[in-house]
Image (tube, rainbow, N blue to C red):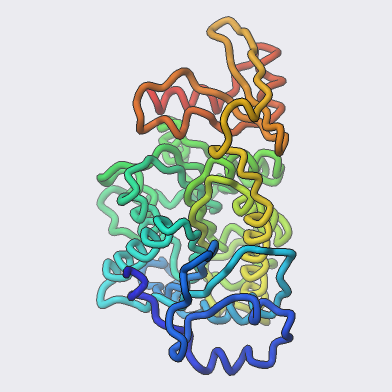
Amino acid sequence: MNLDFLLPLEEPFFEMISDYPEMSLSHFVTMHSKNDGIPDLQGVSIAIIGVREGRGAVDNDATGFGVDAIRAEFYKLLPGDWSDSIVDFGNIEQGASLNDTYFALQKSVSFLIKKNILPVILGGGQDLTYANYRAYDDLEQLVNVVSVDSKFDLGTLDCPLNSKSFLSKIVMEEPANLFNYSNIGYQTFFNSQEEIDLLESLSFDTYRLGESKDLKIVEPIMRDADVVSIDIGSVRMSEAPGNANASPNGFYGDEICAISRYAGISDKVTSFGVYEFNKIKDIHGQTAQLIAQMVWYFIEGYHFRANDYPYCSKDKYLKYIVPNKEESMIFYKSHKSGRWWLEISPIDNNKYKRHALIPCTYQDYVDATEQKIPERWYKALRKIN
């Protein structure tokens, strides 16, 4: 079993949370302990995994050692009206090499996804997103990656894999399982125009910080994601000081929690990670508290999943056909949730089948009726063709 890489939470941690109230999450989540071993997987929906690895975090290497500080704040919180079973599988320790840690995380995440258990990854540098992405190799499907980050982290082709270059490795290295990459919250002065142009030429979706604060834009992006990776440095320093690369600008705490909830409520998201937390920089535990609340909101969103795509047949939608000069566009509106999808032209290639319906907004439908073709439709067509 590939959970053998996960070590139990340590006894001092259990002593610390032993006096938490009975109504808190410390009594709601089943934890991996030395005495009880790895929790039973039967009926589990969400699994928390800590990763004590910071060697790939550029200028922020202490990020591998603060995951229990996040747990301490998370387990103080009270659960919502949740029926989902949540477990904490403990921590992946540093391997002999950074690649060993990547391998352990990749195999652990792959194992859980195959068991239909959603991993929540905490701690370490954002380069761990690469290992998370590689976990989908065994599933033989194209995936969508969404990164909430002020930077694209492209690096250069000859740059070693780290938190500032992991995206280029995801895009360029074989096997190529990436269908779409989306960035939410990038800040232009941290990214070169060449990088911005490159991502545009690849038909990827990038949204500046100002655009991303309109959360109506964020929802359909998250609805189409498989992997969600959040760099806590995307949150402004005043809200989340626990990051050596924190910036004065970024999302507010309530905004990043709303984004986390959208990730949770997405029917397609099958892994979620928050990275780059540096306990040494964290004044009064503020960042640990915020990440704990982000995880809480992610789980809250998960509880309210509508399961209306890709789980329903098309007769569960209201179909709208919009004629235009090029070809008619077909929209679907879910009877269950009121959310909208846009159909791409008939797809013969099986590897693209699960991308035949792309999430969109009501405004996309309105634009189409006014003969304005949604940009997301063009981009999806370019990827398929």
